[in-house]
Amino acid sequence: MTKSASLTFGDKTVELPVRSPTAGPDVLDIRKLYGELDVFTYDPGFTSTASCDSSITYIDGDVGELLHRGYPIEQLAEQSCFLELCYLLLYGELPSPEEMDKFRTTVTRHTMVHEQMHNFFRGFRRDAHPMATMVGVVGAMSAFYHDSTDISDPWQREVAAFRLIAKLPTIAAMAYKYSIGQPFVYPRNDLDYASNFLHMCFSVPAETYEVNPILSKAMDRIMMLHADHEQNASTSTVRLAGSSGANPFACIAAGIACLWGPAHGGANQACLEMLREIGTVDRIPEYIEKAKNKDDPFRLMGFGHRVYKNFDPRAKVMKESADEVLELMGIHNNPTLQVAKELERIALEDDYFISKKLYPNVDFYSGIILDAMGFPTSMFTPIFALSRTVGWISQWKEMISDPALKIGRPRQLYTGPAKRDYVDLAKR
Ligand code: CMC
Image 1 (cartoon, rainbow, N blue to C red):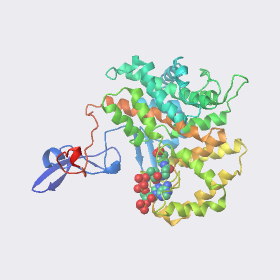
Image 2 (image 1 turned 90 degrees about the horizontal axis):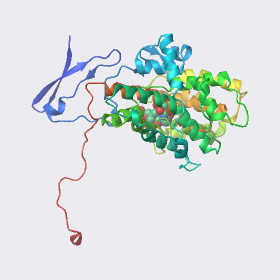
Image 3 (image 1 turned 60 degrees about the vertical axis):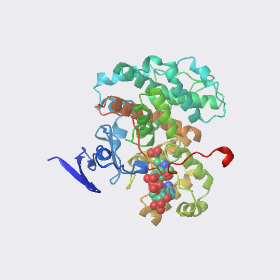
Image 4 (image 1 turned 135 degrees about the vertical axis):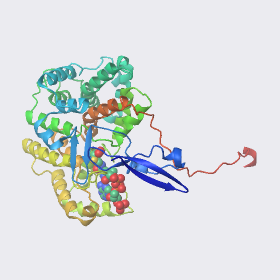
């Protein structure tokens, strides 16, 4: 039976179709609302608005569930790897062994960047934040790879996707190397995706660098846990930018810019900086009080989520990885870790956090692992960005081939002055 909902406004009633998703709440289709009732809906922050159809990722925030193409993130993190997840997100199904081989080879063969990009990097100040450099360089990819900017050509869209997934780690590693004054390190095709990224970040020409398999497994997991998260702020930014027909490199650069904010991907850097600022366990109560104080803008970074109101399933997996990496690096009780553990314990027992359903999110633990691996805090969000690129590009491709695609153009509730006449400067 087709469901509908009727809405009466003034003396008119409109019948709104109700669409039922594979999972999750029903969705009222309000597209004809303005045409028939001459009213808009008001939903800042889109807390009640589905902006598109999507078959890529599903989140059930009440039970703490994250599915990619139907597969639970816990199973993927345990049994799959980042590149296989990329394939799944892009094409909808797990690959056969032959498809996986071909995909891996294609991504691996695209990891080098145009040599002239090296000069482009040199235009940035050495002390630039790597996210600033990435926004610029990824945007500039459209100037280096124009042969994959025609969005009406499915083959060019495919090539752009490969280029972005393959080159983002190279660009992030170059941004890091540039910021510390070391030479750029070329990618190595004999290494897997995560190991190659560690190699490009940590090896130097003067000595041999062996990638530790535990660290590369942890890095692969970090990438998997950040790969996609349905219509979050940066993904919605990519879709909005893409809805105008902008090329994929420009759209992903827009996504990176959005991700940088501390309420989103920038939280991993902000969280570790907060743990360091707290410094010692005895200062935690002071910060908990600050977080609860309505007049203080301070928030506990790494806590809370718009959708997850039970727990963040990514945080659970990330916590396990954190334990493995800390054990390997022999970090048992450094002050930051002590503060993190105690903060987690206190917050989880505190009425304020319990009543508002504020749990540690993925960013709470990722920073601890990345710090233990030797990354500076400024590299945390770039690592999130390179991992999320596959999600962004999968969502962008899905949108471009959606027959219902329209330019994204929200309306507003205007609160400015009513129409008035201009007053000549001399008379004011
Ligand atoms: N510390 C203290 N209070 C908080 C926090 C926090 N981290 N997060 C939310 N609250 C309070 C908030 O003050 C509000 O209280 P009240 O109802 O009294 O006004 C209530 O909880 C609801 O918060 P909200 O801002 O309306 O919720 P939101 O869904 O708009 O925001 C969030 C979600 C993630 C932006 C927010 O929880 C936050 O700012 N967290 C810290 C930043 C962070 O860790 N972000 C990473 C998110 S996960 C990775 C990603 O997706 O990028």
